Image 1 (cartoon, rainbow, N blue to C red):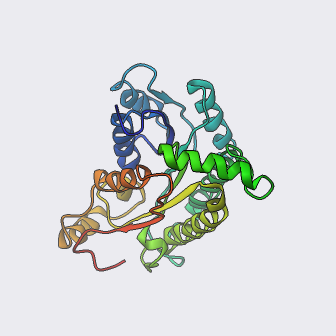
Image 2 (image 1 turned 90 degrees about the vertical axis):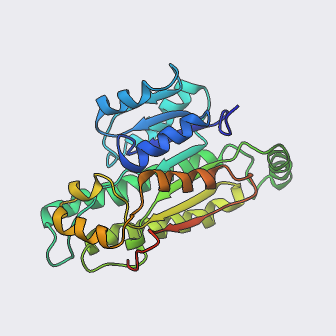
Length: 270
């Protein structure tokens, strides 16, 4: 029996990198999943590795404000229960600072990294808050159900948000991207404080340098950036970040690992 056999998860940005690695780890622990990205064929390939019906695909643009509702409705319709583990992972990178980054890409980066993430956080939080009695208006009923959840070991309810070290330690070389992650980091912490009374865990994961296709798609000059990664090697892998997320979401319901910054051992900055 897997640790997550009774849980329903949603992972955005699941076609590559951290999202793909996490999809595999969640599925191996028995979770039922809805996975999302733009590349439907890649998502179908990932889903085909697991028993029929365990991993469902819903392709779409993470910056689309309607996608959050579609994802959560799809999970409920497919698995007969609301998602209780939602990973806000999809995002776009952008090389450069406010003075030299490509201004034509600013709007798309903000739309995906802040607005799309915010819509999914909002819709998920509102639904999860309704899964137990309101602790303000029905404190005794909430206390009784929360006590049962703690004593029986679940079900936990998790919102996991992918931030970045450059969202906390802004780099002048990627400050436009970093500013979007600064926003996401702040929103995740604010949501954590709001949802704590409901017994919902909001976990911020802040990776350092991770070797994925992200850097190339963000427009980094790969020869120079590759040389930088070599100086601090080995850099992180997507599997390293997934392992940290798995640690957080498999804690007992009353234990919250709410903020994890993870860097390669030899990364000094950011």
